[in-house]
Image 1 (cartoon, rainbow, N blue to C red):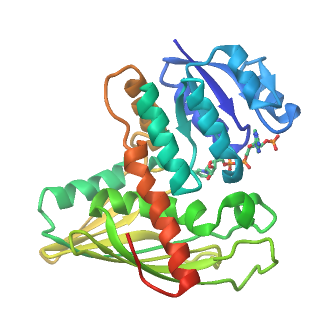
Image 2: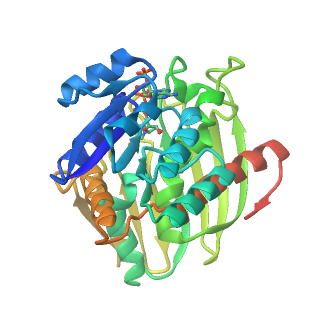
Image 3: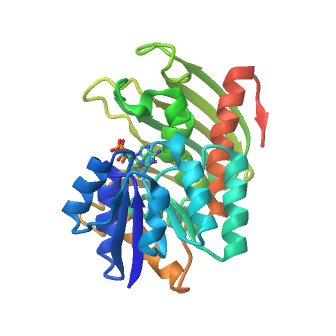
Length: 328
Ligand SMILES: NC(=O)c1ccc[n+]([C@@H]2O[C@H](COP(=O)([O-])OP(=O)(O)OC[C@H]3O[C@@H](n4cnc5c(N)ncnc54)[C@H](OP(=O)(O)O)[C@@H]3O)[C@@H](O)[C@H]2O)c1
C-alpha cells in the first residue's frame, strides 16, 4: 500500500482523496490544512487521525505521495517541499503559479525520479479523449480552427476571485478550461493575443482580468479563439469547445465530473455521443498516478506536458497588459 498525505481539506481534497483511495492501492496517512480543525474534520471523514496545521509535520506520517489541494498562492512552496522530501506529487490544479517554479518542479522531479501530475482531469475525460482520437485518426481532416467558451459565475467572496491568492483568472480558470485539453489536441500555441476587462466585480483586490478573449495560433497553423470569464448569466450554455477540421467538426461539452457530451459533424450528418455514466475522469487520473508511481505507465499532465499551460496563461496576461501579441 502506498501512503498518501494530503495538504488542503476543502472540496477538491475530498474529491481526489476518494479517487486515490478507490484505486485500492493507497491508504491515507495524514491530512494538513491551514487550521487544525478543518484538517481534523476531513481526517475524521476518512478515518485518519494524523492531522496538522503545518504541512511539514506530514513527514512524520512517512508518506510516499502527496496530494496538494490548496489555494494557488500556497501551492508552490508545498510542491517544492514535497519533492525535496522525495515524495510523488499530485497537484490539484495548475502545475505551478509561474513558469520559473514549473521549471524547478520539473528539475526536482527528474532529479529524484518522482512522479508529478498537475490536476487537469480533462485529459482523462472520455469526451476530450474521443475528440483527440477523431483528429489523430484523420477522420475530421486537418484541424483548422477552434473556438471555446467557459463562463463561470465566480463568487467574489472566495479566493478564486482574489488576484493575489488565485494567481489570476487566466491561471486559475483558463488553464483548466480549456488551455490544457486544447493543447493536448492541437499542440503548442506559437502566438497569443488577448484582451480582458473587469466589469462585474471590481474591488482592488479582485482579479485583474475578470473576462478574457484570447486568440492563439498553433504550430500546426490551427487558430483558436478562447473566451473565459467569471460573468455567467444563469442558464446561458457557455461551457464547451468546437474543433473544426477540413472534413468535419466536433463540439465538446465537458461536464463537472469530467464526462460530458460530444457532437460530431461529418458528411452532412450529426452524431451525438453522451459519455455520462462512463468512467469518472478523476478516478482514471488517480489510477494513472498510482500506476506511474508503480512504474507501469505515464501520467498525462507531467511537468513537461503541463508547464505549457502556465506559459500560455502568462502569455495571455502579458498580452493583455502590454497590448501586444506574445510569441511563445
Ligand atoms: N479539477 C477540477 O475540477 C477543480 C475544480 C475546482 C478546483 N480545483 C483546484 O483544486 C485546488 C483546491 O481547490 P478547493 O476548491 O478544494 O479549495 P478550498 O475548498 O478553498 O480548500 C482549500 C484548502 O486549503 C487549505 N489551505 C489554505 N492555505 C493553506 C496553507 N498555506 N497550508 C495548508 N493548507 C492551506 C485550507 O485550509 P483551511 O480549511 O484550514 O482554511 C482549505 O482546507 C485548487 O488548485 C483549484 O484550482 C480543481
